[in-house]
Structures are given as structure tokens and as C-alpha cells.
Length: 189
Length: 77
Image 1 (cartoon, each protein chain N blue to C red):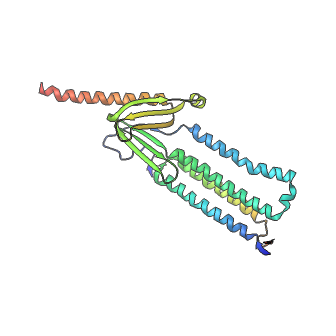
Image 2: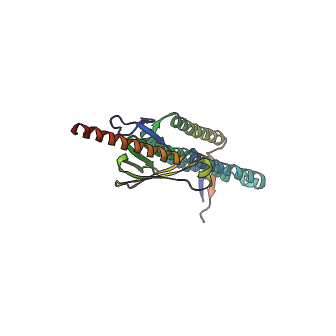
Image 3: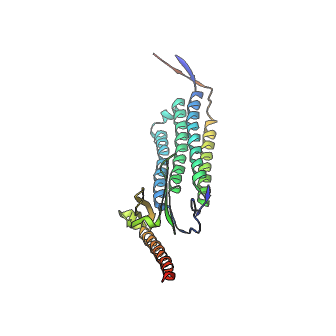
């Protein structure tokens, strides 16, 4: 476990520029569905108590429904926690030297990819649909010249600001490289 | 005709509980090994454990009112 904001395999003098996760709306949306599902056993109990009380009077049916309800709520709590972990472990990091894509795809399936900034060819932002527009989140597509040709920052907040920031970092890196090149050439003249 | 104790339901419930515990441990393992130490992860873990305890407590409270030694008859033919 490493401290928040710590860059994996940090290189010398590497600075953190962006530390991104999905927009919280995604997690809250999933949680709302689970919260709605929590009302189902209560609704069933209400229906049976008022319209079919003889079923609840039967010991076997009562015990079965009672234990089923308990297991249902336990797994609901587990799914809510799993949704958080799925959200929390997907991270996109931009430093002044590279981009890192860490995605947890279900249990026991984790993908980590990184690429140097000098291999980035194109950066673009995408915002689709009514929710993404109103809550200002979307995807950032980064085309690279590496084995993992495309990095996608999924459902992140303010994607166009992220695109702008990455482009600024790339410009700074390019200028730094040009200055270093000029300094090398000058003494020769 | 077979007489089956209500306790059988508890055994089946116990198996479901075992699977729940295994997946909970998987989730906690992922969070501790791959996650980041932050207030959010601590709060989420706390709420998960609190929710689990609440459900189990209510199950125990309601379940303690049932006589699990009672039996029911299952007619095979």
C-alpha cells in the first residue's frame, strides 16, 4: 500500500502533475442502484405482511425468507464496497516525464501501463451525452508511439482541462529539450 | 418421510456467509495491496465493516427468536 499521490516506480526528480480518478458521479450512480435494490426485500415483506400473512405464519417460509434477506443485504453491502474499490483502484497519473495508466478490471485482473511523454503523438478529449455534459466529465484519448498505442483516461472530471494541461506539459518538455540542445551547440560555435 | 431440523437452513446460510467472507477478504486484500492510504479508503473500509456488523447483528437478534431445534417433515413419495 502506498501513500496517496506517490508515483509508482518514481524516477529521479519526477514531479506529479495530475492524479486522476473517475468522476464521483460514476460511483454515486452505481451506489444509488444498490440503494434502490435494498428496498426490494422491504417491499416484499410489506406485501406479504399485508396481503399474504398466512405465508409468513408458516415457520419454514418465514425462516427461508429471513435468512435469504440477511444474505441479500450482506451481499449488497459487499457489492457497494466492491464498487468503491473498482472506482478507487482505477488511477491515471501524469508526471513531467510519463503517463501511467492503472486499471483494476474486476478481481485478480490489474493492468498497469506507462509511456514517456516524448512518445505521445496526440491528445484529445471526448464528452458524450447529457450526464457527461452537465456534470463535466468524459474521456481523454492519448495516442502514443508505444506498444500500448492508446491510453484512455475514462470518465474523468474536466477532460478538456486535462487535455490542456497535458499539452502544456508537452510544450514545456519540448522547450526544455530545445534549450538543452542550444546550450550544447553554443560552445561549439 | 424424513425429519429435517430447521438447523439445516443455518448450515446453508453459513455456506453463503463463508463465500461472503472470502470475497470480503479478496476486496480488502486488493485495497490494502494496490490501494492508496487515504481517508477515503479508511472510511469505505469502516463503513463496509460497520454495515456487515449491523446486518449480522440484526440477523442474530431476529434469529435468536426462532427455535432452530424444531423439525419439519419431508415427504419423498
